[in-house]
Length: 602
Image (cartoon, rainbow, N blue to C red; front, side):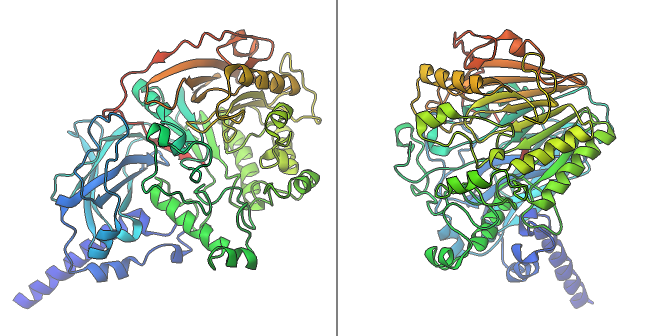
């Protein structure tokens, strides 16, 4: 009898421990139909079935917390709990450049393959007096001690607080804040989004994140691409002048750490083709293998869901924000696009840019995109918000071509895939789908344009008649201006003057400021507010209100006079640039201000 009881207890314990692995989404594959991209959780469980967990006294939350891909009743929560030598300093005020942790994880991996145990809890209040979800989860060195769980049974359009802690230990993560989406048919009055792009680690401090957090001014965050990256030593700014050096002080110089690779396309990247020569030149590792591993790392380190059960590379997806809007996030960089400008083939790409067979997204994503646009209009969503990593509108950049020796058209963006853009416009115009707002990043500059099918529909730039929406492109969080690393106000303004003058649908352009945009969606109006960061080389809460723009439902393009007729910087078509550079301080930096990380990522 006693033997039977002991057997039962061991079996029950095993089932319980196995569940702790299952709960951590990062052990899975990015695609459930491609299990080889995930880890064998049963093998891990058997290996560690009778091994103790790692001593909680040497554990620290090394990378804070994050949340993303919200749904009406659930959200993804992320953290990293790893064995470290140094004390936990994640909750103290940061003064100056400091190294928070010893990142020599390898010594712990070699010493033990035991799991790390963490608890999590989710509550409707910051004091956690009303906990609505909680649990325990394991992580291991195989996924770099990252933890990603899906908090469930939540209420729509509700703010929640969450925290992780080391099991039976003192280590606690910062308290995170998140928010679920409204239910599909909820009649939401308004929603505010913060829109970001291009955060380069050594180029400067990410002040734009802290400003939004301190203002507590948005419901959700949309990130359009280049979420974190850097260049090799000696390339442009290296970070030493502001204490933003890498740990370790060595870049991923092979493919530059753009999640997958810079200038990626279906057959390779700017650095490596999917050929035998590319295979041998990069240590007998094929581009497809690198791409697969990059997707795996991205899945582990970002709070995103498994999008598709049978597509391991898919990140394109859509979110229904009640009846107010559909947010459609595209992948215009790595999924299945036709060959792009690889610097060595610019004349060829220019020659074939109007080939109808070229696609920026690949045929499968294209069909999904057009179907999603039509279904959004059919269901009566007030707005369609399209997140594109690169600028959708045709842009003649002759001034940049003169200043920096670049091509007048960026063939790495929609300007290199004219057939794909024409098919998008045809879907919108033929189906009478209006109230479309494109969001774009990548250019390290601010742009506002009427959404116009150039050459195929009549358009009046004075009134906006003929437009079918608007495009708002944002500058970078920290990456340098396309007009030059040390560009002056005067030169940046000259470039903007030329850009606005050469493009009928471009109504505002600004090249000097790093920053972000806040987009308020209402039932009848959408308002875009642009903010600039005066200096990213110092940690600061200061910002400049650059410009405000409005789009009305049922209208044709931006409301006139555009921007109210006045902006703080850049060039406004038919308007005035004030140029006072008046800054507002959002509050003291450092401390525990946390970005409300309810993120949608491109």
